Image (cartoon, rainbow, N blue to C red; front, top):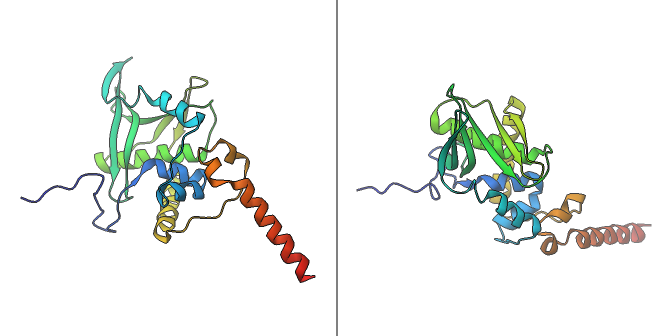
Length: 217
């Protein structure tokens, strides 16, 4: 008897690609170097932000369902897409009375729109669309710090961003190249900050540029 492959080892028939975790798309849009350090070098680290994120996800990570105000909430729902080469899970998928489905992603911070969060949510919707053969028009991000919900519409532009970013991410992983560190304000919130050392790398790059300019004059 032929053994059915698991989702973690499943490959697409069209492209023979191993499935990537959905969260890696978020990492890539936050910082390509962060994604490469995690996926290529296998580096993991925690800080207060990752710990708070784990706490926020404790309830959503318990598989099951409940009905509230006529809406069925499916928690920790596994999703995947052979076409996109993705797998992961939705924190919550809402099933409304009219049959509409909406993925909901839990984030620890205050209510703010981040492109990487919206893209991750849209990627979840694309997985659901492939699995169920139906269109999903919108989802939501629940921001735990402010206890506010932000609706996200899956526009053609957002869908195109997901497709384009996944192609770029796949290219990065295939290259097995870790991009150099470039310091930016978001770096200080990253759990890999002490490992990546973007400030030191940026200072080294600046010194190297000054040295080249000095000897070229």
